[in-house]
Image 1 (cartoon, one colour):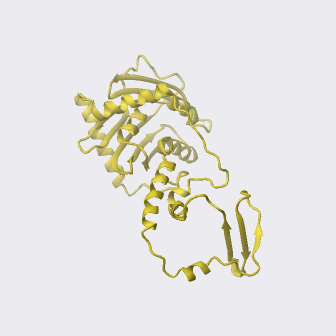
Image 2 (spheres, one colour; image 1 turned 30 degrees about the horizontal axis):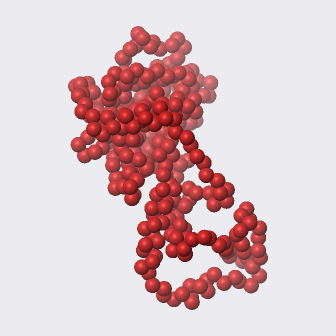
Length: 321
């Protein structure tokens, strides 16, 4: 019933914003997500501005008994700009929040590391690493462990999507690419243009976008040729730059033409800003126990990172490893 995992991703937000989001467990977003990851009960008890107790009851599925986790969460900003958040087992408030009869008390040690990276334009970038060791206690089938391990590690994908600024970063990258394209001089344009000539026997096909003309031709050996043409109301450098940024292009849908707008809750947004500012500027006084938790959290993270027993698995989110 013991499992260890590490997940990493680059998030389009500052270290303080990332840490604030994971610390603000009273937010509507976290309450909504709790249901998605099997949390049936949750209690948040703040100790001070950098530490809180978080108690949860979870459904593991597979007809297993419910598990309870009792955690103390402590964050600390390091001198190099990193923010470390340690989440360890605690016996605090055991009388106020006793383990419910029939449930099993589980154990977990998780650590968030938020490390600042060079910004892209004016958009801050943070390397986020989430390390977790979970002991659900009892005889847990492997399929159930794998299922719930993905639930735990999905927190990184959720954080990345929460702050994703694909559109803004794409615009910045295209602007930089456009500037570079305008510096180039054409060489061998006749040969290059010939690559787009339609081969004999090519047929036009209808696609999902009426303004696009698409031509295809199947060849022997499983090979084929295809071309799509569309008139775009922009400069040719801007159009070329759009398709040059292939990594961000993969996150966009070219066929639906829809934009999803997410409204932020005003109260949640203000509280997130308040916590982020405390992490950024607030003077914090830590107890010996809290400093020890942060120290042990960093050691645990480094030990897991150096382990050769952790195997790389495919992530549903291509931007999370």
